[in-house]
Length: 171
Image 1 (cartoon, rainbow, N blue to C red):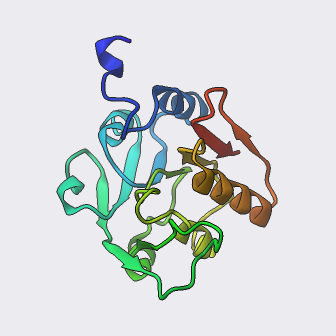
Image 2 (image 1 turned 90 degrees about the vertical axis):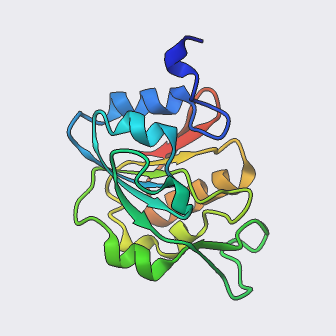
């Protein structure tokens, strides 16, 4: 590992996912991401970024248009009943009101899947342009993999999982 890779992995996206996005999406395009962090800064060197973020301390940390949307907990009904981690999602009113009009890729890397869950993306799927590639980070964890599978089935497009099993994409 060289020094460029030191902040990939762990809490951050794997370098393999970053490299995949770089190969898939031409420079200058727009990414709508859910969850921001170190990789936001790296992607912003090549793309216009819109970042939905629930942690105020991460807002405006990198070159992105941030949409600060604190977690809104569900009323007891889960998106995926078999996955209790789906406790809430970004405040949907804030997300819907601030979505960019156009984007070329959606990156699902938040909110924290182990704490809140990412099922809100599925619940509000009709708000998004699902004709663009959708990248799901952390599909090595069951809730994130199930989310990707459900989205794939609902929009009628296949998914692929990376060789390292860390991310998946609906192309």
